[in-house]
Length: 369
Ligand SMILES: NC(=O)C1=CN([C@@H]2O[C@H](COP(=O)(O)OP(=O)(O)OC[C@H]3O[C@@H](n4cnc5c(N)ncnc54)[C@H](O)[C@@H]3O)[C@@H](O)[C@H]2O)C=CC1
Ligand SMILES: CC(C)CC(=O)C(=O)O
Ligand SMILES: [Mg+2]
Image (cartoon, rainbow, N blue to C red):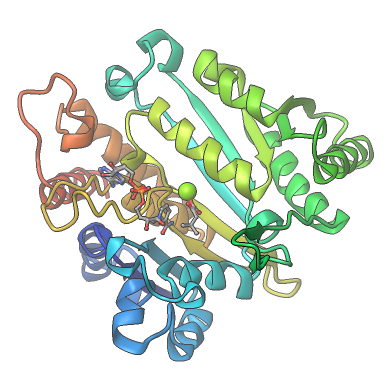
């Protein structure tokens, strides 16, 4: 049995609490000989800053590079609000994404039937929802240069962020979206703001051209990003795959999370380019949520987004598709039984803690493997 090397970066806030629940599951699978995981741990974000004065150390970057997959919970928090911009916690995550060229961020939003009442929308709007946001992750305004604050010398300052996209960046993320749509309901909605942004004009042009050349069998539609935000809460089941840029993808996926009941439910996979020889993609798996400082250390965090991210690692990095299916079924099973963390409690009589939710998912998994 091959060894799957996992590099775990718990990060800050609720990060250590939710990654502990994944480690329980990985250790069980290893102990029972169902799959073999070798886990190493590193520091990222505020935790790395406190230990080394940087948002991620060179040593941890090297160890992340040597792993088969990286699992990162979340970074940031008010404790580090005043640290220099270059070493702020979020810089560690951005460096991992950029240095490993993890350009494709897959953010599925699935509404489990048992949770349809936990959504902020009416049950009939979200019941059966299954959409996938494909977010470009290494370009756009989060990385474009110049990025600076200039002192204008007259008591005024000017802040500059730059949105930059090249053809190849749009084409490669578009290709991922079309390929994934072919395995789903065969529809892609491309989203930008070509009415006010040049990057939107190019985005639309490249996606239309790619569609014509390589994916004419897939249904393609375009929606402006502001209108798409509105449609996500109006009639979310119209979507299959949404492909969009780094900033819009970040915002729209937080919106989509509430359709499923909570930000604590949404997993994600950040994938790099396919290695021509091995077919393997460098990958980092991370929940969509942040470090949730408001609930950190209280056992209130929902570990499902993190456990679901591990499920995506089983599927996309380790080729353990059947096990990934079983883990997802275990999550659904726990929800069917009415077990809820505080964020998805709804009308349930009581909420269970982070570790109780992890234990319950593990027990459901044990019954399936
Ligand atoms: N990928 C990452 O590492 C991200 C980091 N952040 C950072 O996290 C920090 C906090 O940011 P916020 O805007 O508060 O966003 P957040 O996602 O951490 O929290 C937003 C709200 O959702 C709740 N929430 C989030 N995850 C939850 C979970 N697993 N279970 C239950 N409730 C959950 C929180 O309690 C909070 O009320 C900031 O420093 C921000 O930069 C934010 C987003 C992504
Ligand atoms: C760098 C992150 C804090 C940005 C973010 O919110 C995300 O990627 O979801
Ligand atoms: Mg975000």
